[in-house]
Image (cartoon, rainbow, N blue to C red; front, side):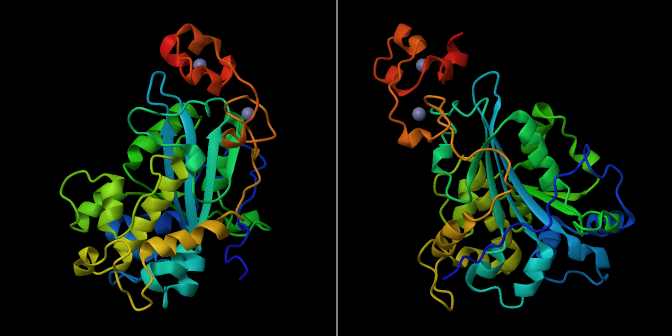
Length: 349
Ligand SMILES: [Zn+2]
Ligand SMILES: [Zn+2]
């Protein structure tokens, strides 16, 4: 069977700096319409459902959903190490939303996943708490990028022309989603010259932690792992950016598609929707086709152990010895990387 993913179509690389600094009338109309809706209602719109009695503005059809997750090194100076984006177009979802399949499978197939690791900090992996290994990213294609390239990626993700061949038609409104999203946006603002409001395209931010409360799943701040369990799937290899962005978006879609009393009726691998397909199976099926998706920025191969550009760390056979770890008598660990890429460096200097 041929992959169900297509290459991203709306993206362009903005020729100058941040493309649209003042929201157009269409974007303002959408923002003002969404402003009167709850988080849950906004997400219901984003999966193609109708909400409320006031007709949605025509420009809403251009909506892009961007779910993001940022991961940082847990030790000072807590630098950003990776970013994950899971995005889709409402126009694609509207074509499948009448018959979305088990667990909204047809909607989930429209997602474009992107995983970026910062080349300057990719060797810093959290081992103690918040452990997550970016080499275990399940979806899409991982790319290593410089800080400048990452800045370009942000521009491409958040500034989508309605028609790439006619920029006078304006830009797509963006619904920006995340789990505890304020922390992710703050991380981006601190690391880059990124003021999300300056894009002029983001019409609403949605937080699945808030949204889960509205759905009645938790009165407390629910963790992403627990939210996924409540939505009927397992967050495999979490705490790496794209896995978490995908899981957040998948959970949001489940919450928007199900009636309130359905939420607790599904459990990983045990639910029996009409097709008998579990949500874990649906998610697994997204993995291979998602490898086809790329914005083309950055490089595919970089070894965070030896610094070479022709392989990734799991395939590294280069002899390595780290002088910092030798001095600290970490005799086993010192053979796993070169001195210049010592992941313990920030802790000990
Ligand atoms: Zn290597
Ligand atoms: Zn070392």
